[in-house]
Image 1 (cartoon, rainbow, N blue to C red):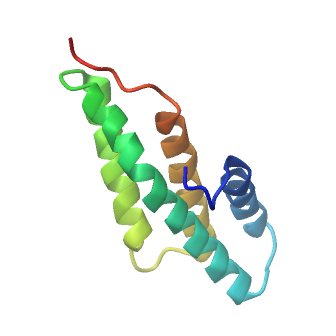
Image 2: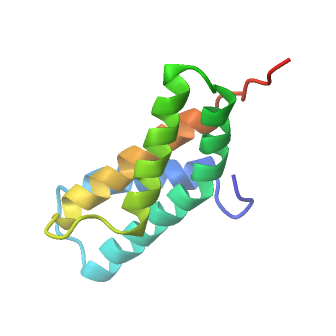
Length: 110
């Protein structure tokens, strides 16, 4: 994790995304949250991808890499027509998943 962003910050933003879907906050706050979630994804994709590559030859490694690629795509921009609450939840789910992958130790081949 970046020294500027703590696990508490990331977890707060994931929870906040869920709460936003239940209310109607000002659009500037929603945009700021979306930008932070995208930044969290950008920070987490490299270590998550390293973990996936450490599982080369295993189906789960390919699954991790596919998820990382999908998260990158979502962080760039979600498909047109998706509602903002759906986009926030999607980004938050990717952040949670990437956090899980980054918490695992890469396997090194002997």
